[in-house]
Image 1 (tube, rainbow, N blue to C red):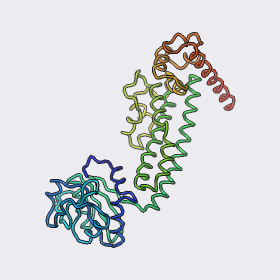
Image 2 (image 1 turned 90 degrees about the vertical axis):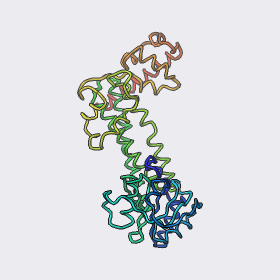
Image 3 (image 1 turned 135 degrees about the horizontal axis):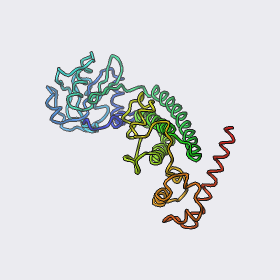
Image 4 (image 1 turned 60 degrees about the vertical axis):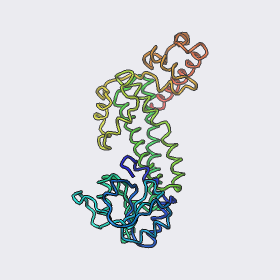
Length: 353
């Protein structure tokens, strides 16, 4: 498996119910252990000594389990659909650093580092499955334990998603009241980035669980729905440059560690916002995006014409009608929507008092 293949792809190939995972489970039950290289080419052939060629024998779980009874490594293609060699002695570069102690694990880690291929080591003593991919190492977890951890992470994601929804409602109120400062925008984007990160971690769980993670995956998709879009719209509304240099602020924020993500000033600098306490006015993209069947071109025309949400909110039907692509009927619809939004804001203010 080449280094370009993602960690998610590797976890997917090793998920419960897949042929490769079934083979590994058989190996664990027969207590023989194994070293399996996923990927074959000149780079792997150069490390091989002894063993025998199987000339591209079709992969089958029972066949791999039988071959694993011999001491040497088994080499398959990247997708674990064909077996090329068995009972092979691998000789990787011994100068490559490894913290492993067992022979199989030391060899597996060095082969992965030298070739970029994924290497799976099944330990007969520890009854564990370790996967080496380049410089990364992870241990496959028991599906029962994994499912419990995934459900716990799902509850965490639900809480964070609920807080993000609250943050968005608060930001809307501040924008309508024209009292937003950059700190408010940064706090919303920080929350959105955290939700996305929890979602990425949870996606690894669902992939590793295979079919058993389908229900969690459905909930994950639902909880993450709209998060990236809302972040993009908020950034488009408040970025100092217009149009902003980048469309998706969450892509920029992925470069930050979780510790740095919690630092408001660092996030503000990364996104090229002004000082945290400086006021900022929304351009109105996020509010306009909520209006049903309002084309993107019309949204752009409205923002270009009025420039700020405040000007939009208090524009008359006649003023709205003057914008290209709006028309009298849509102008009335916009005015009705803005009136309702202003009424809601007044009710929020009463509740806060």
